[in-house]
Every structure is written in C-alpha cells, then in structure tokens.
Image 1 (cartoon, rainbow, N blue to C red):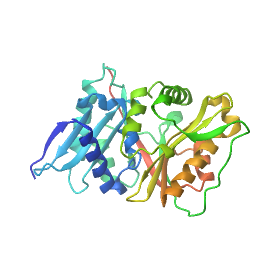
Image 2: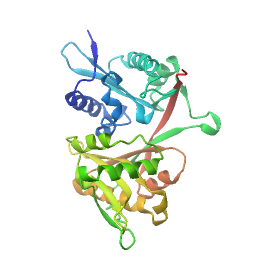
Image 3: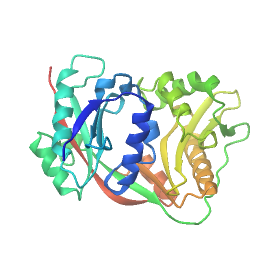
Image 4: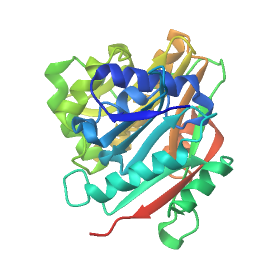
Length: 302
C-alpha cells in the first residue's frame, strides 16, 4: 500500500482525526474527549501535527505533539504497521522544537499495559516506562461507569449556584479559574474558545459552580457521542479555597446526571492510578478501572 503524509491543514482534518479514533476506540485512551484535546493551542502550529493517508486519500493515522499536556497523542489503523513511523516522526519533531515555545525537555506517551507491540515499539524508540522509577513513579488508569442507577445529585451550600457556562462572555473568567486549579498557564482563551466552536460541544455539559459573590469556583466539562452512547469527563476541577465545600463532587454529580439524561450508557474518565482525591471521587460515583495505563518517557535535552 502506497502511503503519504502531510501536516495539519484545517478543521476538516481535525474531524477526520476524531472519526478515525472513534472507529478504533478500543485501542485508544482518548476518544470521546478528543474535541477538548484537539482544540489545544499546540495545533496552532500545523507542523506539530502529522497525518498519514492511503492511496485513496483516506486518513489512516495521525499524531500531535501536545505541548500543553507534554504528550504525544496519536491514533492509527491497527492493521497497518504505522506505529514505528509515527514515533519516528514525533522524535524528529521533538528534536526540532526543543528550543521553541512548543518544545519540552521530555515527552510522554500513554499506552495500555496489554498493548505489548506498542510497548516494544516505544522501548525500541528510546522511551522508558515510568511505573517504577522511585518517588516520581507515574502510571494512570482508564475508568468507566456503566451502572444504570440514577446519579445522585449533590447540591452546593446556600448561595452557590450550579449552571452552564454562559458562552464566549465567560471564557476569560473560566481560564483564570482553570489556571488556578491546575497551577498552570497552559489553558488559554483561544483554546477554550475552540472547544465552544467544536460541533460536538454541548453547552449543557459545560457545568460550573458559582459562589455567592458571583465568582466561578468549580467546573466539570463533559463530552458525549450520541452514536456510541458514550460520555467522557474532561476536565474537572475546583478552586483550592472552596474544596472544603466538596464543590468538585457537586459539579461532577451534575455533569454525570446530564450525561445520563442524554442516554450515556458508558462514561469514561482518565486519572492517575494512585489513590488520590480524584481517584476516590470517581470510585464514589461507581467508576471502575477497566484499563491500566503505562506512561512512557523520552528525554530531549538541549
């Protein structure tokens, strides 16, 4: 089969990337939440994205150097031996941008622990597993909620309000909250704006908690694919000064309830594997681990 590749061009490419990933959902960690990840500012530079096509111009693989996440995201037709080629492209790109705003001294790839061939390819390409590296060990899990029991709604203290994002007018305030929650400036107004403009974005799944003085203090953004009846939670957060009110739980309960009302039969979330607050929160809402996710790292010193 004669293949060719090129950089990212337009939103049409983005939608094709999403379609390919959904077609082979079982092999990919990020599927329903891709509208969020593919709206990131990493895609502002077309050379950070590479697409592979067959002789009929059908998309068969893609890869993104995801600067905000420090990850290399990709998906490809599993019957084609594209993985090593994808990793080779990512390696060249990581070296080329190391001194730019898109570069990092290390990049990470997430892989299910039963994807043995992918693991072999990663190790052959110089990536190392981070599951057992001492104090900085890192691994993740994919969790799923499949129970049809109604989600219990939790309500905030008196004076607080649960509602949806109002739209473009609230983007700046949302970005400020997001940055505070994750202690990072990666979230940008343009990134958030792109999520609102994506065809799969639903305002009713963009859940916020507002304080009595009118400030945004917690959020839970959910994604839903009607064709598969699958939902995904990404992202979820609460300002550190308001966590004593369990507002993250409040926001999540409303997000899950809204997904369930739309007909979601499966709801997914990705989180770190150690039993931190987020992990326990998802367990509380009947999420169960369905996949162990290994984190592989490769360094790119200047």
